[in-house]
Amino acid sequence: MGLTFEVGASSPGGGRRGSLDLAHGVVETPVFMPVGTAATVKTVQQDTLEQIGRSGAGAEIILANTYHLYLRPGHELIRRMGGVHRFMSWSRPMLTDSGGFQVFSLAKLRKVTGDGVEFRSHLDGSKHFFSPEHSMEVQIALGADIMMVFDECVETPASWERTSQSMGLTHAWAARSKQYFEAHKNETPWMGELDGRTQSLFGIVQGGMYADLRRESAERLVEMDFGGYAIGGLAVGEPREVTREMGVDMMDCVLPTRAARHGLLFRAAEPGEADGGAVRMNIKRLEYAEDQRPVDAACGCMVCRRYTRAYLRHLFMAREPLGATLNSIHNLAFYLDIMERVRGELAGFRC
Image 1 (cartoon, rainbow, N blue to C red):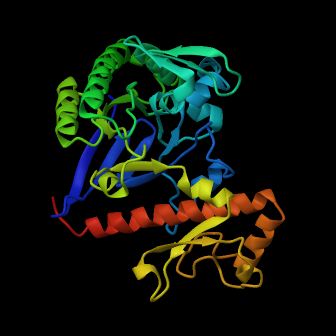
Image 2: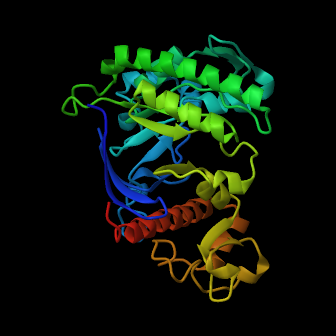
Image 3: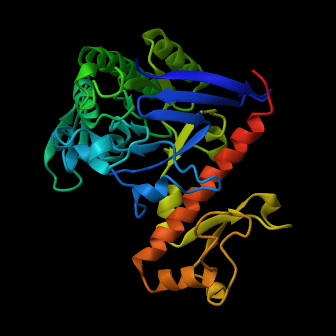
């Protein structure tokens, strides 16, 4: 058995609260997934990830990157170590992407054919080839609870014809991915340790910014009967309002930790500021040099309970590694707390 998903509440506007039961635990949705690209959420250690946020529940699921782990340290090494959970000492659920988006980003270093994608490593220029089958092999070796089919991500803007052609290739690769997964899913490193549970494979809906293609892609993938469905081809240059039209139960982004490493912190807007939304503050600014307040007075994270803006600015200006760690913890807590509030609001509705 892979996963089970139960909807507990849904709102008139289309939002829903659910419970996703995976091999390594239960995830309450909607959920934000911190990104652990190379088997690490940058600057934040695992036991801290398990505790951050107002409730202290921490991150229920994180994401790791197939492309990067394939290149370094290599999926076979991770397989020998018992899978990525054991390798990085993370016992909660995890998701891996297929590597398709990273290969897409190597525009000058890749060649796409019907068989797969030939590309050169961004690390040393060495040549590699990813087919749907090879992506499945790598992800099975990594052993994340959820893995993704290998897909092609089309650029934006792209014509309807170009997008349709790319979508067709994605569907063909999805079928090949599923066939390989079904034949090899019992080769997961932790197979036999978790009451017969297996990994789950998600399809990826493509179609660019064309509603008819998106609908067709979703229908085709549902016919293939995947464990779940992801929305691919977003955040590649489309207008922000187009991105916001897509509704999801699970989302991920590197922004909380990436912004933190550049001294950018998120906090709740104060009365009369930014229309009551969220504010991004630049801790490098001189005005915070003697500011004794926490980053966010409304935040209950371990950083805001203990440290001042002045100290965080000092750490950043002195290039102390602790600064990036504390900034990242706060930003992740901010994101996780937002999702906790959303789940709380949705709990008031019935199915």
